[in-house]
Length: 225
Length: 225
Image (cartoon, rainbow over all chains, first blue to last red; front, side, top):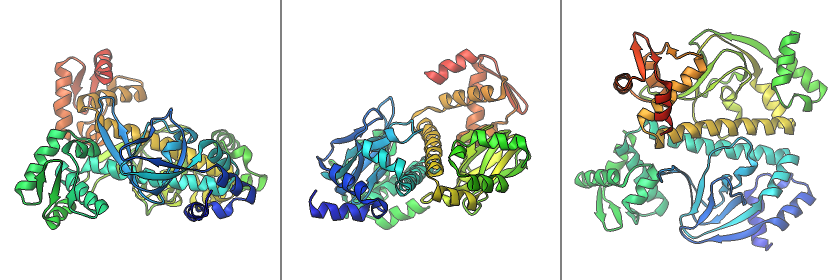
């Protein structure tokens, strides 16, 4: 493993310093750097159990999927985030299926499942870290759930567009109505109808394959309402 | 602590045998038996952090609550279940609020927060157990989420009524339309409308303050559809 990756890993994993030298060596020797192209799948459902990904660069989307093909985004992961559900097989009692895909070209360090399992059975620091990671994702998912349950669709769409503007660093969003529907667990027609309403209200401008945010303040007001 | 409670606790807590004798003594000395009347609150939001409840008898409902007063049931707990979110303050990274109430008269053993925190910082078995418990509740919540996201309301209501029949051990359900709405995160009028449709289809009979399931098979067919 090269030195830069080594430093990155030590820096990202809060339990590193609490491992003993043989465990550190084992971990350093077992981790591999993987690259995923834009749009490619990193994990699909529970039969797939590659291990824990530490995102080195790029952007990752974690979502659920219904039998009828409806999708909802649970959360996104960025540089330095750890992807726990790609190792869901080692999490006892997890019986739902998540799907993970690279939203942009992504590089990630992979800690193999077997090794992580070994570490968490012998190190209290690793077990505690796993717990904290799960609690964090649980909170992310509860946030989505509360949005879905308690928020009207116009508000959710406004929140999503602002979040997207924030991630992209620009109000010009290259995203189809279909893709937005998949993030929000809605239907394309519903998104199209609401975006047309947003356009009529002067909040966005629509173009083929995307949209431009015109009035962030008005969108924010709607989102916070 | 009396002998019967002691045996119950040892039996319910999978990590008991892995604690050392001083830890076992500390736990046995600190646990207290609490009683909650039908409908009373056991935990409300995150400022409230009494500890872990082990349900000894009764039935408990865990739910979330919106600013506008809308409720949704996340899961139910029964005898021998452990209530982890009543100690949410010790779960790092949990930043959503849950509410817990006794649905019937409930007795529960309370493990104080401080003590449980101590144990999970020193015992790998306790840390691992906490993780598993959280994973289990995470799965429960994902099940609700997938229902809310992907299932039509008639199906959700059918699933709920059958579950209720199963819990009560009878098809005669003493539950108001308002209470059903609170379980499902819906509005009373929506529940009333759908129940009238179920009645017209011969699946239920309505009476003041409740309903009677008349055709479980038809309801099941709807639920599985």
